[in-house]
Image 1 (cartoon, one colour):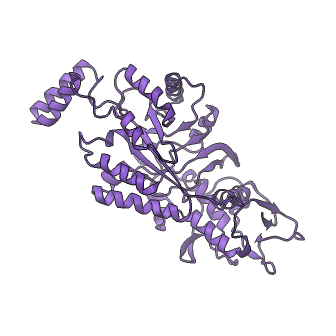
Image 2 (cartoon, rainbow, N blue to C red; image 1 turned 90 degrees about the horizontal axis):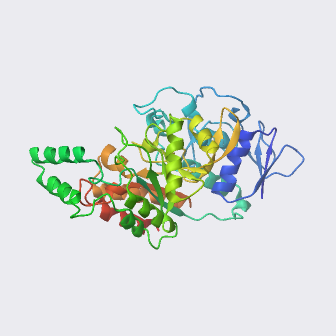
Image 3 (cartoon, rainbow, N blue to C red; image 1 turned 180 degrees about the vertical axis):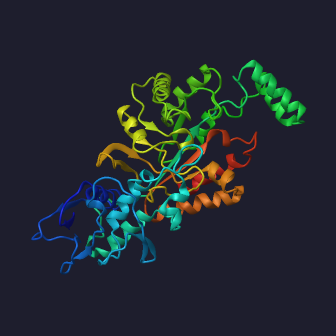
Length: 425
């Protein structure tokens, strides 16, 4: 049990302590405001005798949201935010709260073409620690400074959670007669004979559709300690939504069959994060397909969400977890931690009952945005995985079923993926 003395309590401080001590380190903790009690750590404006002291910068005792000036220093070779003059040279609890609560995402109106917070506007990008689980590293360093408290009550172990987004289950089938004829004619005119033959053979049922590979993808994870997560797109056909024009009975049967092999979640369509009636319809469609009364897990298509509205709506709908917390274009740690944590609503000033699972790396980011080769992508993934292993955290990867086939442009990724699974298990 770690006892923290503070001159006054706040929900923000409790939230930060819960993540550092309980989620990351596996310790129980208590907060006291009684100066006569023996404490293991002091969070106060003045130092105490023979007790490690962290001096607050004030953020955790504020209410409301205002633009913060975030300065950086270094601590034992690590980047540290909100410098102060304590035994530890920065306010570790304020820095943790700022990063976990996604405070910076509340204080800007700038966004990309999809309405998403820009990675380059984050302090992690500006101070070059995007690829570091910095909060977890701070926590382990703090534990070493506490000395005798180095044996946690519940030691943490590295956890690997592979996740699959099912945006598109058919490359060619069930697209409608007119669309199929148009695509065949286009392939022929452009001289794409290999693509023409593949499309024709799939359409005529001579060959299985290359994207209809969910059973094969699920089997890749056989023997892993954790079941893979599979997030199903249930929206309609659209410019940024690739679902077929009508439901497939075979697809429905496959999803039901895979319930024993994967953990299913909803992958809401592009517009559903802003149009809640769409979200409700899609959630209902998935529940009906899987014969479930509640959908527990969510990851938004294009990783589109807005704080705090989107998460509050998930809570209203009975969701327990969200897996959208990563950047589409930049791999790394959006909240600077690899451990799951609860959403903190800054407008309500309270921790909310929605568990956020930070995803670390996505296949599209490596190939399409960073322009990495197959070998470079594999090494990039494994390097991030090793950083998570070093803190005994959760390494969450995001791949797409349509990229795990050798029939089309993502050739080689079907072979890369099992190597990643084996290396991280």
